[in-house]
Length: 271
Picture 1 (cartoon, rainbow, N blue to C red):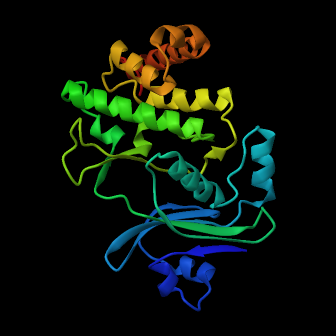
Picture 2: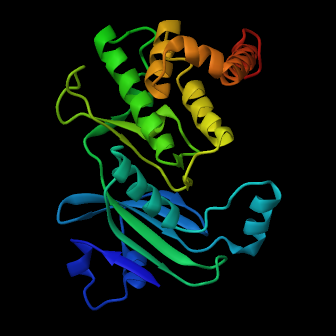
Picture 3: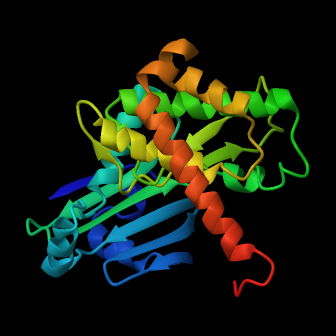
């Protein structure tokens, strides 16, 4: 069994079974499945996000492995990813409690509690109206640079996200964001993988997800080049040559996605 409790849960659950107590927490539920529960709760006026994993069963484990997907067996992946990103200097969540018990991966009971990041807005929501109401160029360029920098640091630290979309980058709004004063945090790491080095396949999957999630926010070709230059930390000429396969794949998939979108929402369609 593994159990790490920081305040306020260290005092709140002193002398009690943390695995019983975490199941008693109440609040706004964001996901309720047989094997996983996610909710927001408050303790002493402070918000926290709670993720409880109860084991997915052997059937689900075999199903994932049969499709070459690594199953999420518990809260340990997110706990370890938070530690890895923090060491790498990538702003992310702060975990205040983590527990895991049970040797059988099919019915392991685990949980993680993180401090709520507030006030924040996801980059998906923040950029939603950019096509018709573009931001100041300096702010847009600063955000592109910061997302590229964080993603590059994550990958160089051996972490790939597996859900790398702009909705998982939170912009802090406690002060109005400016080019010289903006804070982003990366969240939702329960599927993240950690290795000594991220395989190119998984690196490219993260970059693809990020690219597709930003397709319709009005980015220019120069904006894309800004991202690449910061992410790869190389001259653009070298990037275009050495990453030709990746860049070609992104454009092909983007074109297919755009065609599918236009067909679905074309006049007379049944969408």
